[in-house]
Length: 56
Image (tube, rainbow, N blue to C red; front, side, top):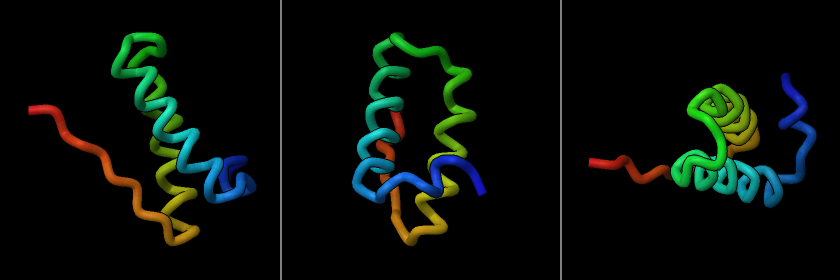
């Protein structure tokens, strides 16, 4: 269990996509993918499916 498990579902989803967007724009480093993994795991435990568009 992580801190992200305590976040409300709507905030967790918004936070996930905000971090992802910041990584894509170069505002945050690729190292933040570790945090995305933790958020993704917390979302999964809550029954939330996060959809990420894969770049080609």
